[in-house]
Length: 390
Image (cartoon, rainbow, N blue to C red; front, side, top):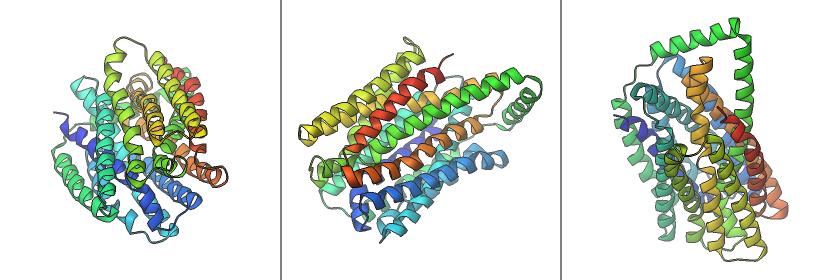
């Protein structure tokens, strides 16, 4: 049964979607403007990077199961700190701590998914990330509804923390995957490859370099596309609080649809073809949103553009994390190490994106979010097909 690992994706996506939908109110309550909120998001990205780096180390002395359980529980409980922050400085501190456990949870649940794939011998990564997107959409929708009826962010996020934290506890206690033998074989193979097969080591470095660039590009698509979407609608399209809170929901619906289609499409098209089409959708959605802003279109046009960007972004991370099988079978790199590398590289982009967007938005307006996404989509269309080439 794969439901314990699926619950990790549900918990992570649901918490993130719930927080995203209340970002505008959280920023206002902390008296954080665009630039200050960008710095706070950067602190969260730094926390996520820290968690991504530490998680593989923890999994060397523990297990993926334990890392998923601890990370999910802490992520849920600490998410309540965001609406409690009374100032931009404390908001940044809260984002950092929450980010540490988000990063660790992200790496461990993807590594655990690889283990389940190897044990059950069925592809799961696309479906797991689709579940994450569905949970994000549900969390964002509930957040939008809560904002529309005036439920305080603290109450909303507190209820979500209790429900999802309890679900993670139940799932974590049920998960059981034997991995110690696989880890030792993989680690030994990796060391052996490094000593006796330099050409293989060179091939691994080349593949990882391309994956790094693709992951950074993906972070500049998903990060600004989600984190700034509610503020984008408020500032540029003059949407009210209820419609602005629906912006992350629109983005996540696009993610969900694409990820549900990913596995069937991979039986008909190559990974490189899917990657090229997906990144083209990202570019088209961002340019369409910019055109809507220039024409002073209604907020519904921005929601449609965000949904299209999300649709294009949907396949990117599942396909990148799925390279763990290739790296493991070809270069003997462990699943935890691969997941850590991909997550860490994606968060390097997430660290710089909020500062860049915040600084640019302070002088040019929040429509610059779409310029950043279009540029990242261009980098992704160059690198992602190469990262997925057999």
